[in-house]
Length: 127
Image (cartoon, rainbow, N blue to C red):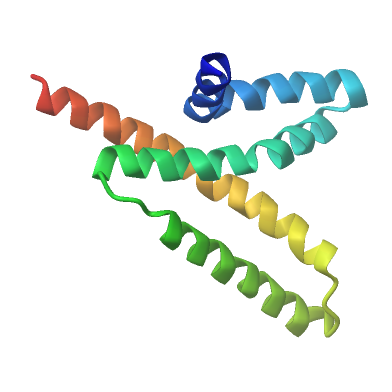
């Protein structure tokens, strides 16, 4: 049981390593760079979402999972409205793909901002 807890903690602490591993798996599987990138980002987006939530909890000592869920819902609604206005027909698969890619970019950047902020905060408090 401890091994599972440590593995989960490692995955959520270092999602970039998992992204790189999945990229190379995708590269072996598809033999195409961009398809491997999409494969890796599709499968690690949820890791970045949870990692940002955990980093916020550790740094600010408050849970922001509710705010993150609201942001995700509002972002999805925004993508729905954009597709409805531009195409007049809403196809969820066409909404989901750009939404999920945007979530990856958003939470990937947030993850690194929070990690850098956390390191700086730790150094300031312990020097």
